[in-house]
Image 1 (tube, rainbow, N blue to C red):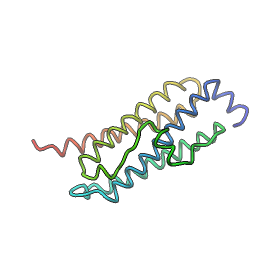
Image 2: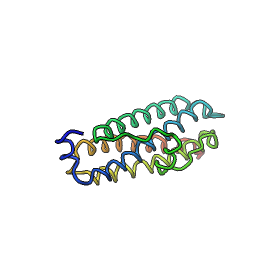
Image 3: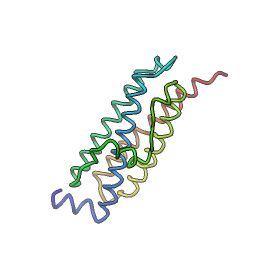
Image 4: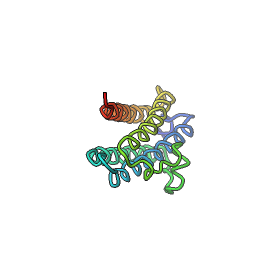
Length: 161
């Protein structure tokens, strides 16, 4: 990282880096979950296969953005998928256990909410200190909030009234 970049990132950059590494691991874990589900969903869930593929692409895009920011801060994300599970804070997502539409969405809602909290905390931690990370956190927070609402809407439509 350049001299000005270090100055802007400030003294709390190590905490920021750890949060970004958590985000990276979470995004790649979510990517794998959504991709696996999109390819293996059962029953009427096949009607939402494209939704799961789109979420996988989105999560991969988020991971790329986080990775770029980590490089700008002078470090790299972990490259071992076995470590992503631990580092993400999401635990084992085990997508093969969630192949009905309802179960897949309910599990996705759990980890989407976890990532929402992470990006909100990240934004709050770097606000008025590290504008690059702050804007990234807000961008990703907005996308995850939109996903949460979309998943909630689909789940609500599954209810029989």
